[in-house]
Length: 451
Image 1 (cartoon, rainbow, N blue to C red):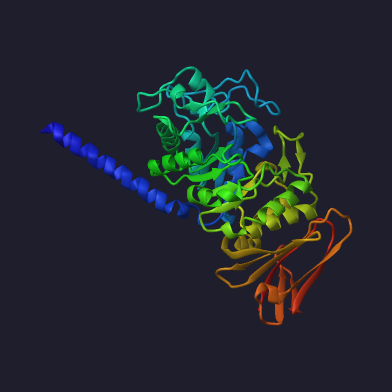
Image 2 (spheres, rainbow, N blue to C red):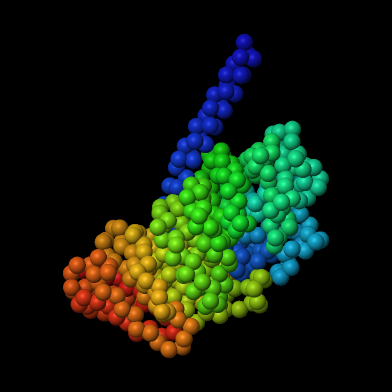
């Protein structure tokens, strides 16, 4: 009798888990109804970020940015390597940290609270206690070391060497092999690592080397593994360029996806992003966010991968242009600079209430034109009905450009519109029929328009 009771209980438990996973699959787009906003360690610390770095940035966010909507703290690449160094993160002598099931665990010399098998849970608890959310970066696939050691996959009779494929290995980082989705045990491995992350309290996962080329099978396995945990873990694919041909697939499986490769603090990175973004406007939807990449402002490259410790190389005009585009496009906002080093100007870009309201409540985001060095993007506030208009001079010329938009092109039938500069809050009076502005090289204007 006890045997049948046990079997019944196990069947009910399995059915419950199945229902939870099914529910998660149907609701995951509600986990990020507005674009996620947070801090990511990559731009400032590369693969060398430590627990003290993360806590310092979390403390700053909790004290200075949380009230403005910033909430995620994300530990980027190779937190599982003991001897990583900036500028050489693909070294052959890497010391990996794995548990008995071939799953990466934090390097204790960098994250001391992870000792005694605790993993990232103590750090996640620290961040959660401050009203924030915790995220991590991983590479797709199974660790090469787990394959070489034929490590067991938790809960199965399979081992890591039975699920890998040497084909399609990441060309710029050799930590992992591709997982063969047709292999028995493949889904179980992804299930095991997401189960581990959920037990740590992870709220956000950035999975690298997924989008270019597009690894649909692994993306789908990750989606299933997240849903199986029953935890609301926002799923971000990286890096770009995600193929537009796979837009429906990535929207079905991820909360956000990169449109381009890494965006750093040079103007060509920004104009390239604006051009690639042209094809993604129709896919800006609650729970689904085309991603402009991190915000390379403030103090970056302290121990990073591109250049030396510096303040961003972008001019103030270029910084306004970058932020205006990210905000009106409704990209996820992942700040890359060191928050404790934040200067007053950069802070003003991150906390402007009117600009963040546009980012949070904007709808009907669309590009009006991108031609002859001129770019115009518009959206409509879902709550107030006000129209937004971002005008950019993206020309390579040093000469100023006149950028003009008739109000009729925005769907504003009235001939008399009140114009307010979003960044300054200054009302510039009422304009009739058209708005026209002379913009210096790489400059922009961001307006709120009301009837």
